[in-house]
Image (cartoon, rainbow over all chains, first blue to last red; front, side):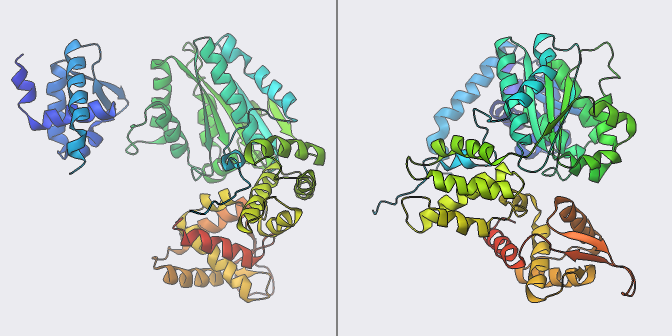
Length: 95
Length: 394
């Protein structure tokens, strides 16, 4: 799997950033935070899950997504995002 | 900048949610709770427990349960057992099982979606979470009356029976039910009632010396040294004892007296401060009670208080209450709620003891609910509500 497949989509990066920040979240909440619609969010989540970066837990009808901490790639991406956000803070204060 | 002197060292020690490290005069009950839940630490998963804590207002029901819960969690942690104690106030949850379970699940999954499923689905989800995390839960349902009044006996039935469908699975959910008025249990179906009444802890009202001990324990961490004399403390204990051995009242009275002392820039909480505070704290209009009310319940109660302030009548009809409420809504720029909603408010306020209701009898045309305000002076209630509403506590 090519890395650009994952990072070529703004929506997917947004979703990864949200999951890195919040930890665990259901689809509607991810969609709301990312400003995407449900179907698009669902598709992105499927792609990310197929690539082993995230995983979900099911509670009846509810699915809750999070980073797949067992996958080293997922761990590294999460760390990258966290580092990015940390070093980004002074700038984002001006927003 | 001028230096302001305050008699308080740490006000939070007088807060209603503060759990003190020591519970004077509740040692035997605490031991009993420990005994009931001993299995949870010694052989987790083998069984579950249901305990009922009964007692009047201010007898230490909540703090007893919370104190036990905190200790139990610590003890379990030492043994690597994932035991959780979750304390939920049913009245704060508007007597809804859905909200109770939601609050419980949020302790495990802070971002669990807040809507889109039923209470039954939530209960299943909770059990699944406990299974997956190999966790055990002691769920304390405080002010259980609210849940029984609004949803009957089904929620309790479901909570007590969920384990029975899981015979081979580990037993994970135990309950502590905290109740002020045991007569509400009569509304619960007999089988659920009998499972609940197996282990009952009954808390008696505190005596005056006991109240003094409790106050003593709080004065040291909450007030600066030498600001509260023994005389002041005795007076507070005396007043609280006459209010039915109500420790919560005693603590709130002490806090208010401290506030009066601060307001008058005194360096000591004098008995006069206590007397002033006693006039302003009515056991029924507790701060936390008013804060539990929804914005429109507050507005409705304000209408009722204003009506009684203006008349000498002991009762007002539902119609008059609705009119008074409509005026208050206009004043606060709020859209008024319909009759059915107001009717619910009346039932809830009556259950919490702020107002009393009776159905009109002979001598009045038609049938209406008559509302009275037996325990609180209308002017004080009005003042308190106006203050809270003004502060934006809607």
